[in-house]
Length: 209
Image (cartoon, rainbow, N blue to C red; front, side):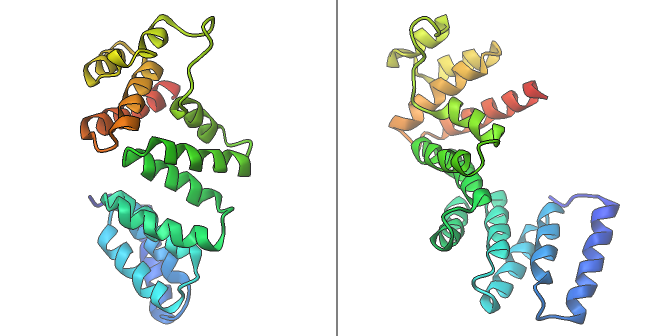
């Protein structure tokens, strides 16, 4: 969906003119990112692919391509681009963050955790990655620290879509996330659990303001 933003439109025009003056420049990546932000994802993908054909090691453009593919829902294709970057640089923080998001959306919770752990190692001050890591890790609080719902969720009998949804409706987002991640660790292809986990994380973000 295209975004109606006059400032963004003006920036796009400036970068289009710049690229028209020098078609071989690296400015294609900036323009592609502006297209992505404007919701013009097909144009962003095409521009990145054309540019990367000339500059295959330009990781900024490849990351923009991965973000755009993820926005289109082409998650496996986005992961392939991230993998290409991480082969060259295992310490790319943005790649690990994006890989964690995509793996989570695919239902691969433990893979998402691995990338979040890498992000936190690279940037110990990354509070969002640290917070998500605490939410997604397969750990059970100590007996004295667990809430009543967390103790219930320690029993797989209650790790169900219905129970997780009830937790979410009651505003218990951490417990809802725990229910959905437990389901996904057993069945990554459970689309309902994947969708509800994303809904839970959005609710959590809104609550944090």
